[in-house]
Length: 215
Length: 200
Image 1 (cartoon, each protein chain N blue to C red):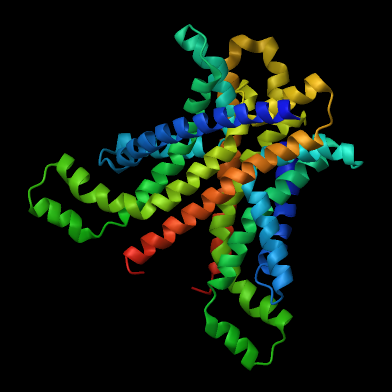
Image 2: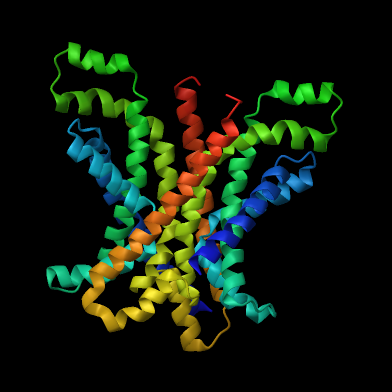
């Protein structure tokens, strides 16, 4: 039993690493996708929109296994499961986050854009000083929710041998011939123990933000 | 097999969405509380963990399910919990006056739901349900983990013989999922137009 819990805690640590690594990647890539979609040049914006749609509507597990098998061949050296897992999970959810950014950016009032033009701001100044500081805070709770969703998606990466909790439970069952009830229930409990309090935190953040905006 | 999973999973998820969604709006605190706790439990753990639990843990409690029903139940219950949120918020979004009008016309609570509230809420539910069903379609690939012969599992079992075709095979597989997703979304857009006709 102690052994099982120790193995699950190690799995939890891997899960947390994968979650935050992938979330960081998704935040950056998502913003890049969101900006590229806004580009006025059609042959950039349209293919990007389709690419986002394609990644978003196909299963993460298939993408992850594909990358797991194809990437090492492509670059000619083996990659650790955690790296491929972070890449796959991050890429998949960057498409969701790009939508989140988009709604945030579209929520910035027109007058703000016009003000940036009127003040003769460069594009970089416009985005960094005016648009993004107003676009991102309102969508922070949605981003928080995606962080939790990503956390719960990590066990899918056991398909590429990432040593997260479900895989840890599996190896424990295989080596001790124990039945699955306790290990799998514990995995579920661990997930619940992290994701439920986190979702309460996100709700709290949402309420705070609404109050600030006087809604 | 993927299509079977999609169909049965969607049916079960749709039924459970309404059951949970309506239960969470129930007059009785006990019904409301039970439904909320269940939904939080399901949403707090992941689909893949639930699938493993149903397929690998339940047999030890004496409930042995074949692969397809196990996958359908896991998928249906999981997405049903998410769907219940859609049903609940769509019903809450129906203007209060509609409810009051139904009461004024002496409709009982069943008639009120059936003829006044749900038809209006349904239109609001369609777009989020379309997105949820794409998520469900993606979720069917997880049945691979219990060895159900859906399209991803079949691909993986054949892959060893055709490793040199790795890229085209996976590209084709992804395109299949993409095409199915687009079909699902098209269907929902069509249904939305049908339902909105003559109303808005």
